[in-house]
Amino acid sequence: MSLEDYKSKRDFKSTTEPAGKNQEVSRNRFVIQEHRASSLHYDFRMEMEDEKNSPVVLKSWAVPKNVPMDYGVKHLAIRTEDHPVEYLDFEGIIPEDSYGAGEVKIWDQGKWGLMKGSFEEKMLKFNLFGSRIKGRYVMIKTRGYGKQKKDDNEYWLIWRKEN
Image (spheres, rainbow, N blue to C red):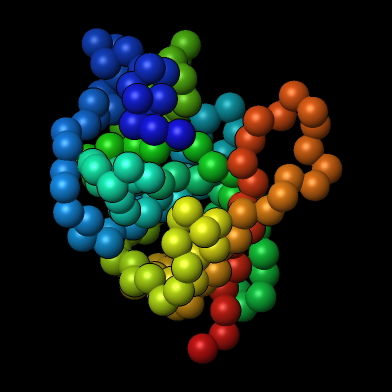
């Protein structure tokens, strides 16, 4: 899910979402955005290199119940297309009849630090250092048990680990 997927879904003449510029070095930032689209969910985005090692993007997941704050609670995270790094600061209204239409507000942001794993390995152990969210987390890609045959979504689980 490349940055090209992101660009192909948007009309930048009608939305204030950033089109994106290339950035070569990750500063390990993250953002959680409250997104009031067709249903309320939270978009969790982590700044990292893409699979081709350039440019840096925001790997993104829609998390219906938000990133869990309690230990051991697992939440579904549905992979979405990569977003440009400039999306870290995006807040606004995505116009009606546009992809992702609805209000986007920053719920939390900060830095993250990798402890183990990688996106390519489909397992990440990391620390979040945000204003609201702090602590150790794990994300793993599931095998998609129970998904419909026509469902191309990539499902992950995210949970908070005890120290």
